[in-house]
Image (tube, rainbow, N blue to C red; front, side, top):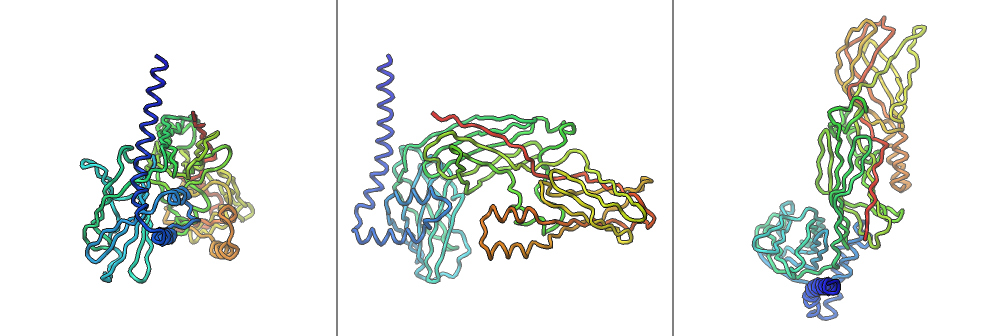
Length: 447
């Protein structure tokens, strides 16, 4: 019986290998019909489309391995050429170029293909694409479809109904080059900490990329007062445009998913989809391929949280002067820099740490009188000069992040005019948003 099962498994392995090899043979045959000079010329065209220093090194590796096809279709004075179509268990890569011989001026319209692998199955347009153009009417594109093709499919239909706003038909049948039988799919892993459950719903180890579908669930979302914090309920900051800017993407990386392979970080290059609510967040992320899985781990960190209890600042006078007030909140030093009672202004500063913003302020005096809040604004005085310094010195991202992180940020609160005889102010914030220092780690079993 054991020998029988072993023979069956060997037969299945051979059939899969034949299927993959057969697909690649068809792709190779298209390249075989080209002369050597044509192959070299086409390779030069392909190399001009793909940057060897591209962050997506899985794509670069796959393109170097795959044959060059040079399949063309012409309509409406536009010649469309497919150079390569590559597939693994994570995605399909289409590399193409086109030339506008009639000089259509419209270049803002759609240029996004779809792939059909069976009459009943149509993949919609690619989820990611990169298009570059020249002044002489030539353009090229790399189109990524984050889906897997059936293993037995040797060809697919590439459908193009619009190029640069011009409607037409550039459909063609294209052979599939497979980078290998790499369907390593791991599902259903979990790590729990402090009422949060971190899931890896699906991890796919492809030969050109690694796909990780993950989620974080707050299992006590309706009873978080005792814990003191929950997942952030919003993604836009209130302080103003200067704080709601790419600045924060450099200072604080939200929802950072780290893939580690034997203590080496496998870089990520794209996030596709995802969502959030008051009790959960989820996302699908793509990392570079893992060539030799060893001690594989998925680590989730830098999750944006929100305090569930108000943050209170008690500010008092002594000898007709406001006492210096400073308090550490989530590793950030918060100071009261200035108070102007006549204008109803209170200026706070934030420096370092993990606190992003405090909002929805409430101001009372020692008699319990509530003062109306008007608005608030944010300012980072040294931001522009530091940006120039980073650009001039061409600093790495980690160095730049450290500089940004230590910049002093000012938050000005505007209330109605306050009585001049006040000697005590009770300032509280309903919302305080910060980056958690917690980490969730899942070790990936690999057989």
